Image (cartoon, rainbow, N blue to C red; front, side):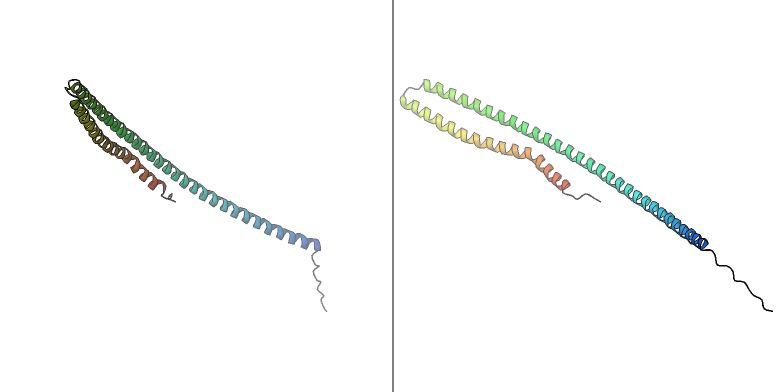
Length: 178
């Protein structure tokens, strides 16, 4: 006796298709889920790095702003100091010019009185010649002295500004720290 085994019937084609479709759907869902997780992770890393960079930049900008404010304050103080020196120098020059003008006026009054009491034309010419020569010499000497004062005052008044220009150029030419 022989037994005959019956072959199992082949699965129906729709069942095989449904099984393959379910497996494909599972794989796609797994890929989508993995992609979503990776995208979320990448977004979080990018957002964190961006936040960190923004915080660093904000701190740098605040530091730069404070440095510029201090720099400008010192520049204004130097300008005020320079103006004060120039004002004092102008007062000194005014006093000196006034004193010179007064001395010149006094000398001309004295010479005028002497001319009025002169007894001869020669004496008048001699007095006038002495007065002109003395006045010219005094003018040259006073001009040189006033020029010296003016140079000294200008140098002193410009020194604070020159120093601030050096500091400002040095400060502004430094690269921004990263």
